[in-house]
Length: 399
Image (cartoon, rainbow, N blue to C red; front, side, top):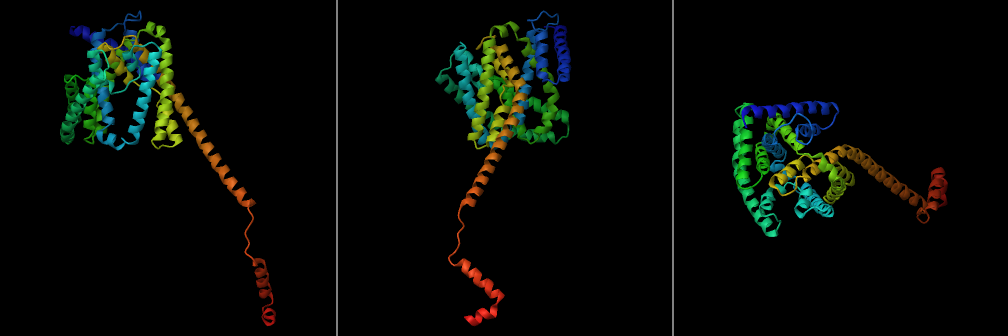
């Protein structure tokens, strides 16, 4: 593709995305939906004269995926993960196990293939086993075991070497006091790790995430995140536009039952899984319920999962708009669930307060009904002492 066509595609995507962003900001809606709408407009499925080349946009969107995962890694440093690994790790493991099981069962009930059922509800570890699944076309225990061993060796080498070099390098660059130098160095480490992961047969998203976690160990993750944010936001916009370009409205109408079933499975399953998991991890009922109802969604990360699956040919292209629709619906319902969680938490507090008051009132009523204990002869002694205070001489002489 020549430079003129590339510039034309980039201008169309960014201009339509800019207008959609302003409109959705005015409507106080997530700007991600604006980018999806922009992709739908410039995509091949609507009769709109603004059409962008999907291959060019998809190539640019890879940069958005890498920078998004790098920014996510900056928020999850290895030190923080170790600190919260006990309770948060237990909750995450319980939730993931429940949701993978629910997603698989719902997929089988809807007639999905075995591979599509696994992709219906999945998490970050899917990025690491995707290459094996795509090559073999099956999910055998042997392949997964080999993949797990290779992944462990790759992560051990990358994290072990990176933890010794990357934080020191970032601190040395930070001491120069040049923000542009820090930005270029951080992004260079990000793309180097992404390329290394790709060379070993893994997704670039995994390498970028590990790079962000290693950079965060330098202690300057806040400054670096502020520097990377403008670049990340621009390429992330292109990524979400590319996601919107792959939405086929006819596929949504044909598979509306799958959208409805998966949406209910995500909302109900995540509310129950997170609430029960948080409660078993030692959190109170109020905290557990608020966490469960606040996390009943699948976010933008599901777009990355779905795009990797479609690009590898593991799942059908029709699942892509289904995953996007489920994510959009659950994101829209999250504010409502958060409001309901506040009311539910207030109801729990009210019930606990009322129960405590009833318990205290019952104890007091029972104590009133009990007979008071009086020592033998106490009334006579009290009368004698009273008479002695009134007539001390008379009582003494009579004795």
